[in-house]
Amino acid sequence: MPDDRQLAGGWAVTHLGYRFRDESLLERALTHRSAGAANNERLEFVGDAVLGLVTAELLFHGRPAAAEGPLTRLRARLVRKETLAGVARGLGLGAHVRLGSGELRTGGHQRDSILANALEAVIGAIFLDAGLDPARTVIHRLLGNLLDGLPDDQDLRDPKTRLQEHLQARGLPLPEYVVGSVAGAAHDQWFEVTCRLPADGRMFPGAGASRRAAEQEAATAALAALVPGQVTPDE
Amino acid sequence: MPDDRQLAGGWAVTHLGYRFRDESLLERALTHRSAGAANNERLEFVGDAVLGLVTAELLFHGRPAAAEGPLTRLRARLVRKETLAGVARGLGLGAHVRLGSGELRTGGHQRDSILANALEAVIGAIFLDAGLDPARTVIHRLLGNLLDGLPDDQDLRDPKTRLQEHLQARGLPLPEYVVGSVAGAAHDQWFEVTCRLPADGRMFPGAGASRRAAEQEAATAALAALVPGQVTPDE
Image (cartoon, rainbow over all chains, first blue to last red; front, side, top):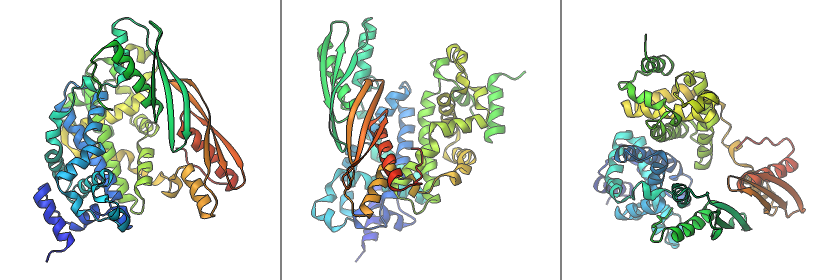
């Protein structure tokens, strides 16, 4: 009867198309910190960087007209936790993640962060096992089909930027953002911001867990008023 | 008489130990956005990711006992703007950067951000010209000797973390951080924070351009009072 390591190794072959030379790397990549000191956090650190480079390369070639800002936002979209967790679920990765008893009880196998981090760790393990080329091949297989689903570079400009461009294009003065209040303890703070349009004095409120988030929400409200039907991507 | 491209190509050979196959990539990497649309911003996006991976790999092997948090902070230290600008100066990179007239007048050739971004763009250009291996070789040559100068993993814990650990180790209640005021316009905000130690009610002020910076400063003050001689690395 095959042990966990053999099962995981077989899973990598069938689901990632990659056969590990050193299966202990894969075992480590599938070990959540709740399961012990020999866990996947350091491999996740490497895998995150591998993913960052391969997606940068993909977007550089795939979006030849995109400037650095949109490229950065497109990549954030591609590698965000929810996206990676969805890919991990499609691979049935959760069944191979080793968790501590606490995480097991609370359904850690299905938690986005645990799945996304384990997938990053597996990518880091492939890179350390055999270098960038096989890691790139696996990442292309896992994320390549998501590239077409990404928004246009233009749509990815954040609301504050698009509001500024909208006003500049019409020769109108730029918006002013004023913090109304900051409340809450260090671990969960709440910002209330007002976006004022000097042209007509209209004010649009926004709130969020960061000043940036609050300002983006206020800018989104202003855009919605100025450009009915304006679509705003989630940031 | 050699033109700029030939001069830059020769500089890459003598100072980076790399000969470009496609010297137009190097020319692009050395063109600041102030000099035109065909600038180095997209190459900087790629180079930043190459640098991120190669330094992650260096630290993974060089700091086998470091957890993900310290590895992340060590890498931030290694690739921060000031460090890269210093390396760029050592290479005489500024003399080859193409700037617009405005930047030229204001001494852009010596600006940290311009030098650091150009160096990242050159690294991205090497990666696109010939792949990860030559880029890795160049990065090791440029940054390898900085690895020994990095602080211990322990020293890299941020002041808030070390203050919390200091108190926990002594069974004391954890500090409370309270925002006193937030002032300033969106582009330059100023936070004033107080760190209170419930054990004896002592309060330590901190201020900074971000809430995090202000809290770290307050925690540093508390640490200095609790642990005289405590050294705090710059964050």
